[in-house]
Amino acid sequence: MKIKDIQVGKIQIPLKKPFKTSLRTVTVAEEVIIKIITEEGAIGFGSAPPTAVITGDIEESIAGAIKSVIKPKLIGLNIEDFEHIMNVLNNSMIRNSSAKAAVDIALYDLFCKQYNIPLYRLLGGYRKTIDTDITISVNSPEEMVRDSIQAVEEGYRHLKVKVGTNEALDIERVKAIREAVGSDIKIRVDANQGWKPKEAVRIIRRYEDMNLNIELVEQPVIAWDIEGLKFVTDNVETDILADEAVFSPREAIKIINMKAADLINIKLMKCGGIYNALKICSIAEAMEVECMVGCMMESKVGITAAASFSAAKKNVTKYDLDTVLLMAQDPIVGGAGFCGNSILLSDAPGLGISEVAGWKEI
Image (cartoon, rainbow, N blue to C red):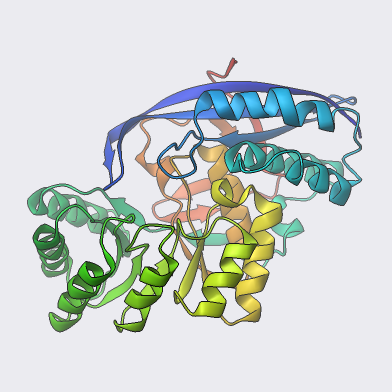
């Protein structure tokens, strides 16, 4: 099954309400969607949302990388020579992790279709259903409490609370949410690089002194400051999750060896797709470090890929794959199913996606 063409397009999906972090505010999800087409007419779907503040990738750079650099190297290659194709893809250019992730996902989709197996089973098949958290955007404490109560009433048991804009407010926000939702709900705090190391220690120790029972704090300091991340990890009791600090397997090795974080967050758009995500997960598992799988503002194409990877691997124990639930529409036909906070993987081959409504070629 040889690759005949790669088509690059995009979709736009409005959100139910603005998604706010310390880094950005999003009202419409924009995503590059690709189709890898074989000589036999099989189609593999892949996707990449432009996330300039995290990956540095924008729509034009993702589309340009795929069409100008990656596509010419892949045309004519046989899907069955999978390791060779992945080597070509990953060495086609430096960085551009989102473009590589989109192509990687589509290649896995095609490989699974060739052998009539769902992606989550190909990758390991450890489980078929996972439960995602739900993100509480950074706003006033009062609005965040309302959003949290609504999420709990809808059945969510894990809240991912965005902070990182103001020390006093960040303490008040989390305190107010804990008081509102009670002690049985898991709270994960995500500063999105918003704190300085000493500031992070002060805030997290306040959470601990107030017995707010925070499950973990995600990426408290700026991504490049691994020493600062380690300072935070060494000086608090709460588990620290490295997110933007880990793009590649090499960074995972460094952070784990330094004991700079307690947990690793794997995102396909950061590491360039499933092929490298598997490496990071294996490295972490060998060192007895558990992983979360997270996402950017992705449609059901990327979320199905990430959920399939999550479900497949025992060492992935936490899931932050809620963006489809934040969108006002779902233009993706097929793929993973959603029931409340549960994501159910399909037994259809690959991603199980057959069509993307509203797709426009770039």
